[in-house]
Length: 255
Image 1 (cartoon, helix red, strand yellow):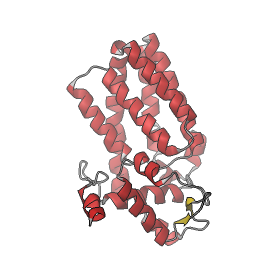
Image 2 (cartoon, one colour; image 1 turned 180 degrees about the vertical axis):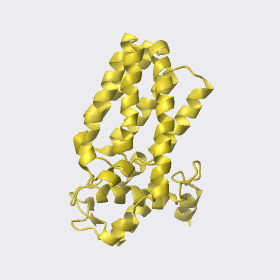
Image 3 (spheres, one colour; image 1 turned 120 degrees about the vertical axis):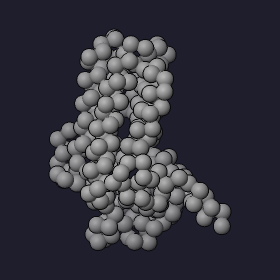
Image 4 (cartoon, helix red, strand yellow; image 1 turned 60 degrees about the vertical axis):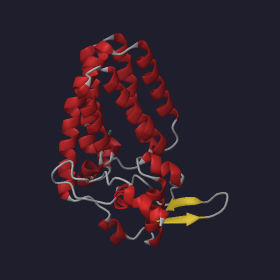
């Protein structure tokens, strides 16, 4: 009963109706979709070990009970396998059922809506970056640099995603745009609801943008900082699931 109450009480963030065209999904189905799509797109490989259940929850911004139920459901359907013992954990199945993976996909309406969400974030990102280049304090710049080091040392997508979110939230805060920052943070959170597990090597490459951004912010090079931020967000059209699903994983390999 407690598990049921916890799962029901958690906000169904993914597809919760904040943008028209988004399908409504339960929190558990959202996790299933995000992991399933990462497998379908080849971002999670057969036999690859997923992070621990608690880290999956943190990386996908859901409760531990939701992550547990989603992983259990995927295991029942043969998408992942669970192994006990010291070398145990949850692993991508060697041959996940293709019919199940086909069901764990975003609709065209969701893909279109997320593309619009990327465009919305792009506008906000350029604005907050411009003012962060003017207003960021030395302490905030030091913290941004620390977060780039954390991302560089991350060994899995879960930890990287958490540090990445903190990084962009801090850029927004450093802009000192008051109430506009809240709207930016809300947009950022909406988009993070659609991020899927990604190979850590690709994420480390993306972190080079963060490093370049901090350098430009420190130097007060406004135009350079805004251009780094613009490219960093605009590429999401090709590297989030809707871009990869349209052109396979080649788009990711070219980044």
